[in-house]
Length: 639
Image 1: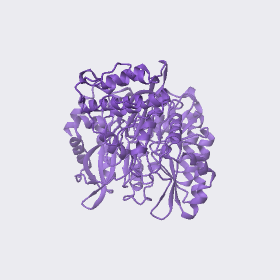
Image 2: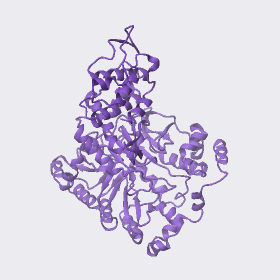
Image 3: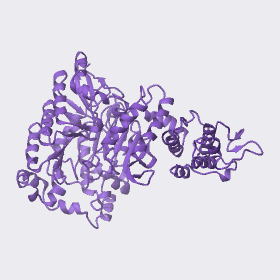
Image 4: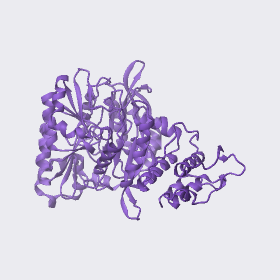
């Protein structure tokens, strides 16, 4: 462990302010005083309790009230637990519930005088809020249909339960890590929990005919976990996990809060040195990685119900942006009991399943008021949508976010309804990335932008091409600082192309690999959506600039730029720019020359600036042409 010790010593010249706060008292001493804290009100609330210690138990001071995170391992709720959450939300939290991407429930608007009472009510049904904030092991996620689905090979809930028993309410582990620690464990063939996006990821694998897990480590916002080249069986997971956390607790950095996640330790010491330290701590040598078995996205892809191993069904209720209510949670619990086992499964994409619904009960369930209320969201654009909290409830939010995601989904469903399709659109209200926009098919990160008049407005950075199925891959930036009012049109043209060229039942993730990124540079795709926005939505021209199904440009930007310019000239004038071309050059000795306003002269509906852009794209001399799409995109902003 010498390498880890040297790295720690190099980073131990100072500690951050949070570590200083953590040294002031023991978290469990604060927990023991919850009733007196509640009784004393805000006047008696100490700065350190508000800023740190209460967060160890899921309580986040919002100034006038509290937000509360309820830990729900694997997203699994019993009937009694669901009812309790619903009633607590009704009575103490303005009847508001958020379903989060860690498959847990967030309550808001809880007054300080009620915090101890709420935690007591939750504890009575076996629910805890321990370690759902700050420097702790956060809620462990898994397949929401763990133990039920046909593709589930290893049931992971018993493993997660062993984690919970060993760590979560154990004072030796509360607030002792250098930074937060996210864990995922997937025992299924389908990736239904963003399995490569956690500090520690146990991914279904097979080694010499034995099923177990390959280990991936070190994800954070914008970075997917890396292969640790390690295979552990289900029986080995708990002991390995304890050794892993012990090494991180001992050698993880405690200086710069922004660089104290496991990711940064791994970057400095390397994966082999870190794994060797874990093996030494565990006193065990583990096998090298087996074959990772993740094969697809969610098993219920594109469907609101899925047949389970016992011939019953799981019925998916789409909750837009995860915005739910205590009233609806109570109704969901009662309908789950009336038509199924009574259990509810929360999902990482902020929805929920009612499980073990018999075939004969499906029709009756679909006729209930709960299902009728949410059936309007049962479409392509809400099915796999994620949106984190925005400005309304999060101090870090830059844009409202949840309402923005809902508005865009409705718009797209009215404009580009696609059958047998799947697209994942994820929204983060700020760069912290709680909406997991980096692994989305189409992702949005909240920012400020400028409108046509130069006014500062809500905007987004648009991303495309994130992967989460057989591989973990971060998305590419497509547009920066686009007003939200404009962003939906860019997405519309991406989806129109998907609708036109996709194979039967092809997901957007697969289509993006096969068509967009294989055939075109991302700069070309950016220009493609921008020019269509200008042609159709700003100028009102009934003209669609389409991408070629089999382009010959080979993703070379200068070829793409020239080819796009020739096509635009023909679309807007009805004439050929050149009689013929050979590669990047006209074939005639004296090719057609035009002036900057040529397109506008032939078609008066075309603004002079757009005419100039096309002139720069198609100049008869290669040396006089624009070289990159980025300079054209700047020019297009002036139209």
